[in-house]
Structures are given as structure tokens and as C-alpha cells.
Length: 231
Ligand SMILES: C[S@@+](CC[C@H](N)C(=O)[O-])C[C@H]1O[C@@H](n2cnc3c(N)ncnc32)[C@H](O)[C@@H]1O
View: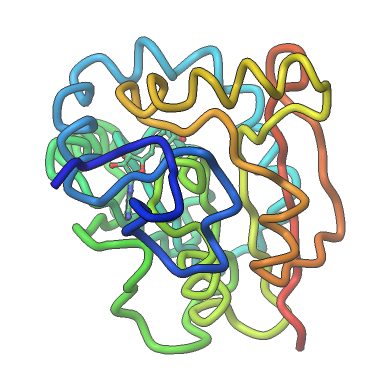
């Protein structure tokens, strides 16, 4: 079976029905895993500096308290890990063993004793309900087969009153750009993301009511979505 395809209703295989309208492109975990195994060696060079302003802004929005517990979903090569206060306990999860290997090298190199990383699917987290003060997904949501299922899990493991922060590229509001992003989305999945995820539909289906949405990175083409879990 093909691991990705342009969405046609009769061919749609992944995720829940509610997720179908979010992107023209369908992916499956096995395909995503293979893509990231391939690009793990060059990820920091290609997606490092260009996407870094958004990562730094996300730290401002997370408002991390001393000693708090943090889950980073889709931790990749661990590019964010040294920015967390050493007083915090940080867990990073990722689907790709290749990306996690790079993260472990980084943890060792920087002596990050407060951080551990685990191989896990974001749509099936193995943590207890209400485990973390902050749950952060940087550049993950447009990569996974079912973004709504991932948010459901993020919300479940976040403590009441905790922050859920999502940093991601979403489809442009500009009609021309949006058409281009939809057209190239089946190609973009080969370098790790869908370019046409629909932000308003995503927020609606995931039942997210953000306290802020900041436009970040080059040409403000990425969104930093900050939410607080109901207390
Ligand atoms: C674009 S990278 C983001 C890496 C990092 N967070 C950053 O700031 O650059 C997306 C990461 O999500 C991981 N990923 C994709 N699908 C996943 C899933 N279902 N569960 C956990 N991680 C996943 C990929 O392996 C990859 O490391």
C-alpha cells in the first residue's frame, strides 16, 4: 500500500474522518519514519537556522517555571533541548530512531542530565494523564498522519492549567500561495512535512482555543499557537 497519496475520498486510509479535511496529503507513520531516518544526518543544517527564530519565540510563550516538567513531542535531533532550564525535567519523544540517536549525542555532548528521550508515537503516548506542566510540539503537527489524535494525546498528558504549545507551518491565507502549497504538498512530504495543513479547521477539529497565535520565522509563514488546558 502506498505510504502517501493525494487525498481522494475512496483512497483515504489514515487518521479519523474528522482529520481528512485538514490537508490534501495523507501520510502514514512508516513513511514518515523512513523520511526522517534518511534526513537525520542533514536535519540540523537544513531545518536548523531557518526555523530557529520560531523555536526561540516558543520558549517565550511557554513561560517555563523553575522545576517544572516538560514534554517535547517530536523532539527530533534535540535541537531545542539546551534551551530548557536545567531545573526542569524534560522528556522528548520521537518516532525516528535515527533522529533520536542525534538527540542522544547532543544530550551527552551538552551534559543535559535533566533530559531523556524515548522512541514513541505522538498519537499513542504512554504517559499517565496530567503528567506534564508544558507540552510542546515544534514542527510536528504537519508531519503526522492524524494531527487531531496527536493534540488529543498532548491535552491528555498536560496538567490542568498547563500550556500546550504548537509551532508549525500552516496553509497560507493568501489564495495564490494556498493553491501552491496544496499543489506541492505531496512533494513536501518527501522532505518531512505537509505544506497545506489548514489552521482554522485544525483548531476547530482539535477543539483548541488558543490564547495567542504569533506569526513567526521567514515571511511570517509559520504559526506559534499557545493554549492553556482548562483547570
Ligand atoms: C520537522 S521535525 C521537528 C524536529 C524538532 N522538533 C525541531 O524543532 O526541529 C519532526 C519530527 O517529528 C518526528 N515525528 C514524526 N511523526 C511522529 C510521530 N507520529 N510521533 C513522534 N514523532 C514523530 C519526526 O521523526 C521528526 O523528528
